Image (cartoon, rainbow, N blue to C red; front, side, top):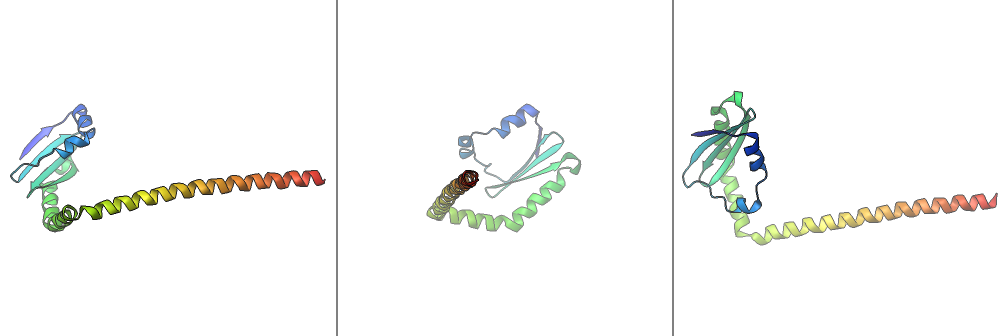
Length: 138
């Protein structure tokens, strides 16, 4: 198990990760545990069977408990995660369909908001016309 203290500057660099760097990330070939410490927190990583689990905890908890949590996550959900990820790999068209539907819903929502704004504007204009008509009658 390895532990490394990170400065705030290093943590800022970690937060601003280029997505292309993530695509090139390779998990260690063997199962591994390691911890990074920063600002009173530990970032505890468990790499097992090609999956990486991360548990963030306050330093006072120590390192044993976060790794027990990560290990139980692996035991409880590992097979389901692997099954789901394999399904996504085997059926990329399903993932694409979902993304397309989400984009369409977002587009429809935008059009609806625009239409509602136009109706409200028209309502205000009608009210002004009614007021002007009443003023002309009096």
